[in-house]
Amino acid sequence: LKSCPSVDLEEFVDNILKKYPAKVAKKRKDHILVRKEEDPARESIQANNRTVPGIITQRGCCYAGCKGVVLGPVGDMVHITHGPIGCGFYAWLTRRNLFKPGEDGKNYSTYCFSTDMQEQDIIFGGEKKLKQAIKEAWETFKPNAISVHATCPVGLIGDDVQAVAREAEAELGVKVLAFNCEGYKGVSQSAGHHIANNKLFNETVGTKDEAIPGYSVNILGEYNIGGDAWEIERILEKCGIKIAATFSGDGKYDSMTSSHMASLNLIMCYRSINYLAEMMETKYGIPWAKVNFIGVKAMSKSLRKIARFFEDPELTRRIEEVIKEEEESVEQKLAPYRERLQGKTAMLFVGGSRAHHYQDLLRDLGMEPVAAGYEFAHRDDYEGSHIAGKIKVDADSRNIEELKVEPDPEKYSPRVSPEKKKELEQESVLGHYHGMIPDMPPGTLVVDDISHLELEELIKTLKPDIILSGIKDKYVIEKFNVPSKQIHNYDYSGPFAGYKGAVNFARDIDMMINNPAWKLAVPPFEKKPLLSADLGTD
Ligand code: CFM
Ligand code: HCA
Image 1 (spheres, rainbow, N blue to C red):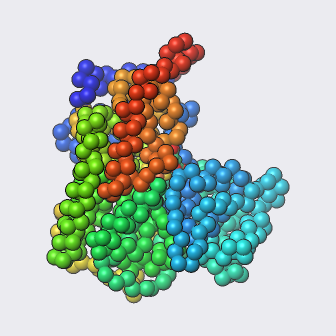
Image 2 (cartoon, rainbow, N blue to C red):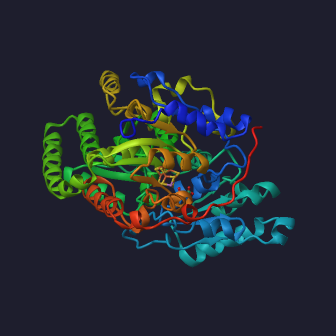
Image 3 (cartoon, rainbow, N blue to C red):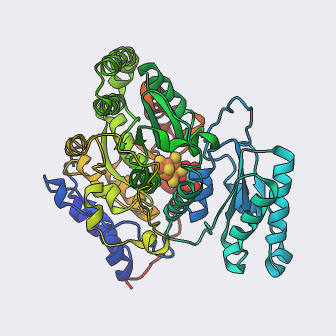
């Protein structure tokens, strides 16, 4: 490792694994990769497996992935959680997906709707209560659509949320989308993404044909955390690119219905939305391009991909002009931060895409990512989408229905000629995500679904200057006198996307890393020994 040349990473990983019982060590071994090969195509990792019971993981559940992640940000809809109150309560606003209402002024994003199931509903069934909740929501708010999300007990007692939704839709005349996203499905929130994608594709996309003039794109997998989508929108609009729909940051139900008319799908978070992109390509002929709007160079590179796709000299000229102007202005602001951050090391353990996306931004600041991993991503997010076909069907795909999709005889239209498409695929502009591993240089560590035990060992030995992570480990990390920045919800800050976002991020990171308090505080476990236990070897 460049930053700690004295550490033999293989030996270090072996020593961590020795702390586990043998069976657990065997399982965890395949989820930890010491980057060695110069050729990243030869490196692989296990992912998207069930977490070993007893291990403290950062993962969430299927309901979190469906309601919290994919549907939640659509602010002109009412999202009803069908289940006990806790599920709705804990998914209420903590993700910081921001929303500005459209012309109709409809905005329900700050509400928490739940059927608040009680013991008698579990015994006698909750369908009547759900029907009543949908009716009340419609009569009180008149939202543009309603979604219903089943949590664990609903699946266990067998409430037919699909039938209730169909009935309510027919009676009230409003679209009601019901999701069987019971928390226990799959192995993480990833299953919920898939369920959400399937229904949005089947019942929303393509239900209204409204032509979208100009250079139109949909943005997929951008959720407007801390206002990211607004900074992206500012830049794209300045370039003359029209955002037809976003799935689903600052999302409006109506724009999703006609999103099949756009020219190009831009994928920000591949993990949560690749299903929808693939299905839209098959049915409507919209190709997808993987972009990353996090980081100055990454933002410019993504804009150039769009320019390459549309191939209009005037648009390309405009895009180059915007890049020049924005980069110059941001460079001046970043320079003083870079001086203080240069050479600092970081670890990133988060979600299914940001542990990769934020590496570009860290590198813009002269920082070095030394270890990274996702909570719940699949092997293609690590190794690249091109190997997806070679990977054995994984846990999610076994449990969650793969829709059979055919080209729509009336609505299919290829956006580019087959020759150009092939060319753009070869250039990795279209249909290609290269994944995290190729971007991690030899001598770094990749850890999938990291446990608290592993995280503590990494902190003690590799001593990073900062860890980008989430709420479940932030304070564990800070007790080791290492600052931890939440890159799920940005710790009340943001936006971090685009050019202006990069400056906000640099300011926040500088404030944390160069804060003298870290050197002054002594964690309690350094003053007096804590209890320890012998886990045994098997
Ligand atoms: Fe995609 Fe996300 Fe992420 Fe994700 Fe998430 Fe999130 Fe995340 Mo939290 S959709 S995979 S399920 S980028 S909620 S906005 S921050 S874990 S890295
Ligand atoms: C989720 C949402 C979450 C949690 C964040 C965290 C988010 O997984 O249900 O663990 O800090 O981004 O809000 O990922």
